[in-house]
Amino acid sequence: MIVSIHPYLVTNGNGKEAVEFYEDVLDAKVVNVQTFGDMQKNSQEPAADDMKDRIMNAHLKIGTSDLMLSDTFPGQPYQLGSQVTLALTVSSVDKSKEVFSKLQEGGEVGMPLQETFWSPSYGQVTDKFGVKWQITTAIS
Image (cartoon, rainbow, N blue to C red; front, top):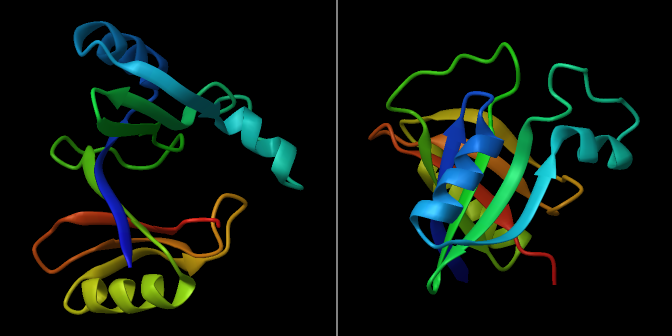
């Protein structure tokens, strides 16, 4: 079952500034902010100094809607027009595989489905229409 869908903004190293901006402009409530430096607590490899303060994931609540945001990894290409993706949360690994498989037909996989510390099945794919998707399975 599809659980939710929401916009996911990608910034180029200025994620903290963007979170503060949208918090003010959109009367958003900041639910959670994690940096890549925070991620190293869950990883064997420490985050590089130039990425420790970049936003890995921020969750803002705007009324009843959710807005997500993250910075790019240093050195990753950043192209205007590609800074908004759609984040789709599904209820099971099987459903994530089904949706991901269908979205990748005629498209391009950015990150294959895989287990992460926040999801048993997460991946990124651009569909045949050029829409970028992040598929994540909710942890029950």
